[in-house]
Image 1 (cartoon, rainbow, N blue to C red):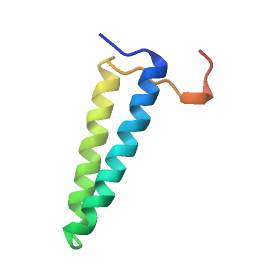
Image 2: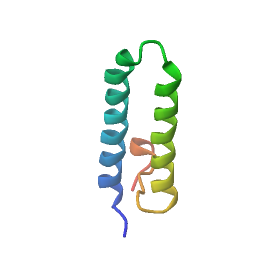
Image 3: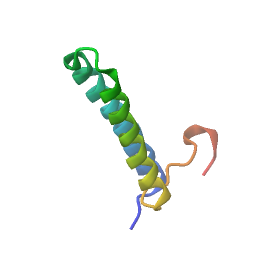
Length: 67
């Protein structure tokens, strides 16, 4: 099972936007412990990489390549 290219691109954009928003909202509550935000961001990127590597997501290079 996999998502088609346009749906994968939308998923990646929403996922990255959501994780950035989540990190910025909770980073102010961490009182200077920025490493927690870095680890969270790294784990979120690792999950995204695993979804792409497994073939579930096939986002392409967005507008840089033609279908």
